Image (cartoon, rainbow, N blue to C red; front, side, top):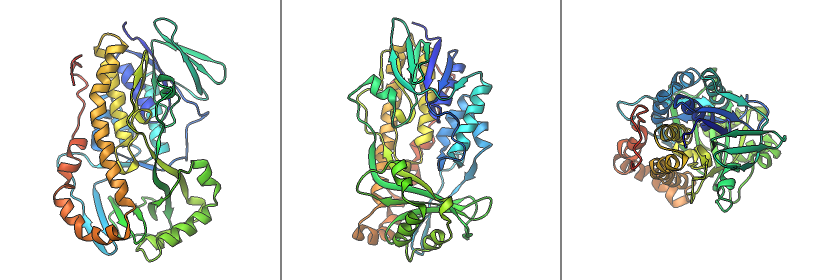
Length: 398
């Protein structure tokens, strides 16, 4: 069966890119998003890695993201007053930093320019497969029909449970996330991110282009907190807790003191997706965080989502029908995303070290950076990855 039409569930990162890529593959795709509007002003920052930029470039969406992001070529690891520069990979573009809401807006605008229809307020509740196609049913009573359905609906994916009711859900990383902008300047280059290991917790910071300092912190937690539950705690109380954790940290303590409660972004528990038994069934398949969400420690969540969206479209373009296309897509993607997830999991443990590990980190880290954590070895295969859009996908391709 030739695929001519697609329903894409989810309007975050993977959904609009999947729709753009499907349109370029000759498949008419429409995006259905559960929320009534775009997420203006909501959500923290994220990074697009060089491989993510390459995947966006393959489908003509790179410029839209470059326009709302800024390069961050410098990275420093700090242990108290001891600092260590992390060498950049030569020959690849800089990491791009941007706000999630800006990324969503840019991708939506790019998708509409490509002829993609995006409908808000359409929360998926069920899918029927009556013969050669799918019918999506939404909470408002409306329906949509197409040849296939793509689940790009995030870690709490409805499509994932429709594909496999026994599929595992997201796991708690043991970390609670916060972001804000402090009314204080740090003496850093504007293009540098500092990853700081304080006396009792991990945090990062970088200069804000409009003045002040952007910072993020992770609090170790013994149970998961939903964003709503975490936001129910007054921001002033969270700042008090963060101040206790980072007392004596330079500049962590000052950053927290210089942050007003109304500017604190409480992100809730950071989540990852465990390995799924299946990514597809019948005429439905998963992309992005619905299938593979590494922790934010990887720096690759959005980039891997973009890659998967592009690769799925290539497979549907080149292979005979959804079955062979979905199988090839999973073969192309699963080994790569699971390697990234494993690396990020190791980093998570380093963010909440015990007292002995914390004492040893300043001594052992320089050695690790020259060996197992050397950039070319640690992230070279991730960041140098480029999808050749023009190359046909072979059915037997691993």
